[in-house]
Length: 246
Image 1 (cartoon, rainbow, N blue to C red):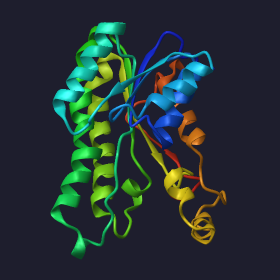
Image 2 (cartoon, rainbow, N blue to C red; image 1 turned 45 degrees about the vertical axis):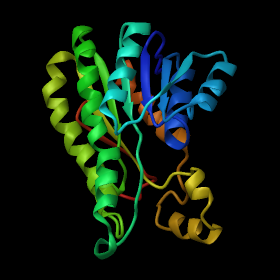
Image 3 (cartoon, rainbow, N blue to C red; image 1 turned 90 degrees about the vertical axis):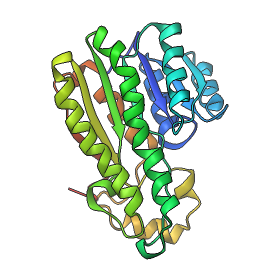
């Protein structure tokens, strides 16, 4: 099940957290993973994957730089000749109440979380269309569905990814390219580990399943949407949030 052997998968923001978990699980299913992140940050992810006998390579990527994106896509095509799976995961948060939020905090979040999805997809579309198939999976957030105080910029960027994906899914369906969204809830990452046990307990109390999610929970959803088993699913939001939002 979810055999991705022979597939070439690009994962942005693959150095840590959800991106790293997605890259590792895609590789475990047989995909050749291109782990993209700033500088050499994805090297540790690739080391873990290759140590397990699976295939991966690290590539430098600055998602706010269109030239960097174009170089990354061109390099993948030169080395592998195709792109089967594209996971747009890279993102940042710059939280602040609306009255105090600086314009630069708004601009940086939109420029990192939303605009790169447009640029990367546009660069990857020609090879996907030529091979008449592909899987595009955009990582949104429960906050893009519910909103959250102090996160108008982040919520707007993640909600924007949902609208972007639904419109794109309609455009590309005739080309056998599916476009879907995974919307994680509260996930155990380095960021949440730094928060106090009490705060984590308060969060877990808002979740019907009674716990924070793991990066493996999110990665499993991505692997499903990337697989042949999900070939009749497009334009959908798969919520991985423990029931926090229904």
